[in-house]
Every structure is written in structure tokens, then in C-alpha cells.
Length: 149
Image (tube, rainbow, N blue to C red; front, side, top):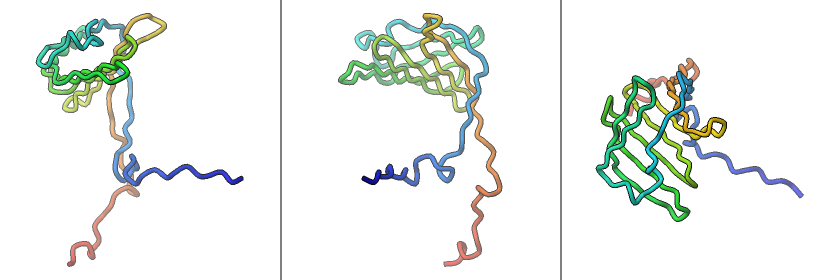
């Protein structure tokens, strides 16, 4: 019996033609406290403010835009970061554990907060995002025929 090949990925599924390769580097990491009510939707409302101290010099203020709970009880909080610079915060909590990402596109920074089983606490990682350089083979140059109708 012949084995079937898995279906090919769609043309826009992150190929080098549609998305640059992103490399992530951890700049620093430390244990942090997160708001204990992040997984309790009854205590979260649109317009509420969240404050997260990730590092001594980094305190982020965000305003909740949306709170949702799926059928399995997973709570998702979406907030706009206001200070120190604009960005977005997404917190997903399931079975009492949260995963939080804070994206600051203008600062080219991203923070990820995960539960560290070994430490029994949450750990914040400051990430630096770098787009890989595009090589000469990746550049599409228009031909003369592209400019003619």
C-alpha cells in the first residue's frame, strides 16, 4: 500500500517570497510577578489597566481592549500598551497557567512571559527581533517587459 504524501503548504504559508526570516535572541531574563486575576474574566473589563514590571527599568502600562473565554475555559486578554511606548499585549491563560506576549514594534522588542516549572514562578524574557538580511538571489527586479503595456 503506497503512502500518501502530505499536502503541500499553500504558496503564502511563510515562504521566503511572502515573509522574511525572523531570528529571535534573548537579551535578558528574570523571574516576575504577573497580575493574579489574568485568568479570571469576571475580574477583567474593557478599559481596565494592567501594569507589569518586567525588569527594574521596564514597567509597562496597558489598557484592556478585549477579554474572551473559549468553550474549554481558556481566557484571552488583548490590551494596548500605552507606556513607555505603543504596542500590544496578549495574555492567554488555561488551567491556571498564563503565556503573555508584549510586542513593541517601534522599539523592535518583544517580551514573552512563561511559567518556569523549575523555579515555580513566571519568567520574563526580553527578545530582540532581527530580520535576516536578504540575499541577492531573493531580490526581484522588474524587467523592461514589466513596464510595457
